[in-house]
Image (cartoon, rainbow, N blue to C red; front, side, top):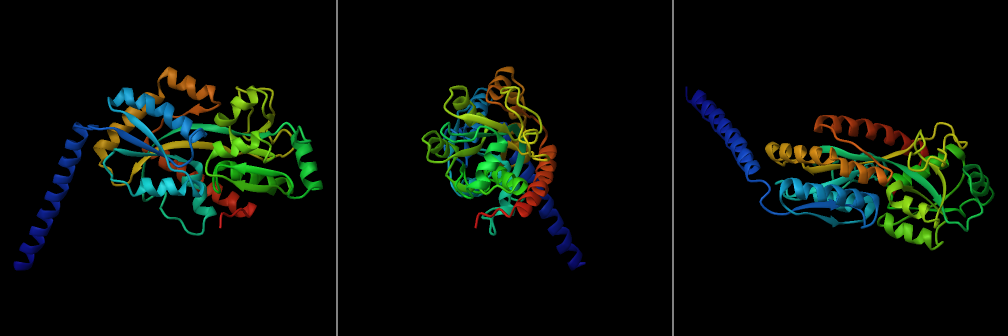
Length: 329
């Protein structure tokens, strides 16, 4: 009987703890948010991740009634910012703008990861998918995909391509290009798209497979030469620019995506409130317009849909990384 009483007491204590936890979570959600919220962006200001975080952050500020600020923590292909977010208090006041790099590519590219992209984060929703745009400095001697391939093969390693960091989608987009064409390019990683773009505009590097939102303005101004988009279909924002596949590399396709996360242990009622606000913001006509003007496609989905999408993307990009031989170590 003594054993039974101990077991019963343990069960009752556990049940009480669960009930208390649920009550505390619900109570926290009722008063949430009571202070400003921070979105950690794992790349420098001015890049696509930053642009999208600021668009969404502005909408969340109005929707939640508290300031939503962006904190840029670049480095290690997004791993520095992701690690900081994963280890932040799980109270809903720290969010993370993750990418295909931080949550689907880096685990295949880096031998050791400082965080677990699945266990350490609670997915809220994708925010947008965007094409990558292959752009070149106007001084370069090639204007088409085939001319780039021919030039790179004639001058192995001379064509440099920048990226926001090892593991970011522009890096792997370039690795996939090399794998499918046999052209040898030299990867130059930066701590974000903005410094890479600065060097491209200055002629220090030759090309980028950059996210369209951070490259399109320079194409429109004539400062960069568009060569092709990385997606299966042409972009409505640049209808005259061919896809890499139709320009001579059949089977080539690479799409970047960006999504919002919270630390894994964030109470579900708080997650539910954040998700509802995020989906409402992504459904607003003005937000959709801003994302579309950047060449992106806004996406709103359930956390379960987002989690399933991430799982599929990790499998896809893990295979691409392995076949391309790309590595960050």
